[in-house]
Image (cartoon, rainbow, N blue to C red; front, side, top):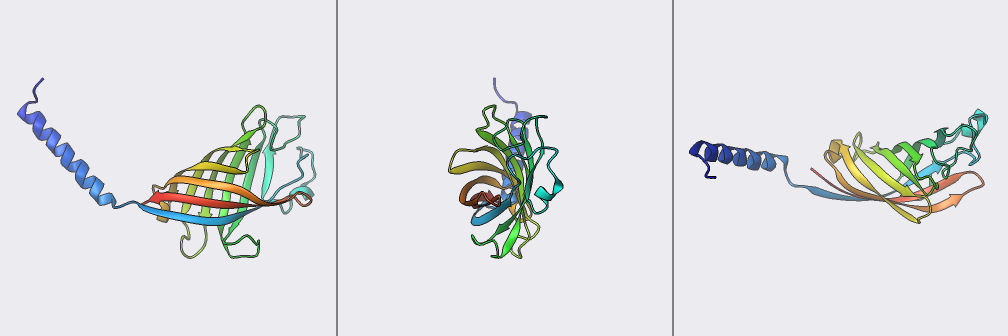
Length: 188
């Protein structure tokens, strides 16, 4: 089927609009970051009747689960809420650059993985107010987990990429852990 003159003109106009709209967006930038996430959890045998004193200093707590079962990271259906500090260095007293705020749900029947949906909210001078949105499956028994960067705001508007999380320190006596986070994002 041959294109009519009017169809050719319309096609040319659409192609021109696409080229100019793409040019206005600009070039993609790649940003690579490494930082540390500090998490204080609650006793792994937490249930709805546990006293509030167990969660006073916690930055990650279970908020719901199957009635009559412990709300743990390996119990299917348990949902956690987190607001963890992020620092430049491994030490918890190093400069804080933001917070990791979100939810994770044990989504595998056998408890082997959780679904993570979180915002990395930056508060430092360089990225203040910007966010990176992450989402994906985190496998509970792997040393390094990778999740997708599915968006962002501010400096990281239209971000896409990936983030890896590796537990580099864990103290089960006081429910404290540190995860090293490597993030690679493409953004405008």
